[in-house]
Length: 218
Image (cartoon, rainbow, N blue to C red; front, side, top):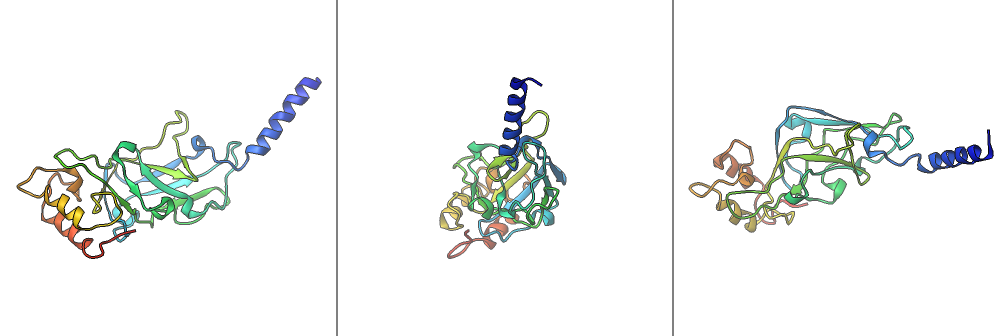
């Protein structure tokens, strides 16, 4: 083998060692179990249903850029973000918004099922709400991608939060906004907490449970 080839092989070896342990976001398959689209009601305090109780959950397999599984990634290094940044879902601080069930095992695997999503969902006044229609999984700051096309996962989960102003608190400002969507006012999908295409007493009951001084907050 020529000196040039030996040098090139050495560089590749060093590069492989240097990058081992770094997440490959395009080589980390995520398996969703549930029916899409799904509707999920949230409160910043996290006192709503877990993902599993709501009927869906996720399984992760995390590998590094050389294809080795990465064990012992903390559960709080996993969380969900909005597929559409323009929808402005507000997290209760990354992993505090939701987390995996455990650290990754020796095969780089973990699940996200027992967590409840703790978020606010600011919505504009008017009949058209910019509410969450999909979630993308994140691990250690990397948005995980579908192997092959390397495009971000976007699971069709409609997230509705009692925190309508996105300040991570359910208070009078949220009540004022919700009241503008209650009949006979114009419908707004952001106040439709059960995703049944109307804002009615069932939505009011959900909101009322999470309202009250000092409000349900992160």
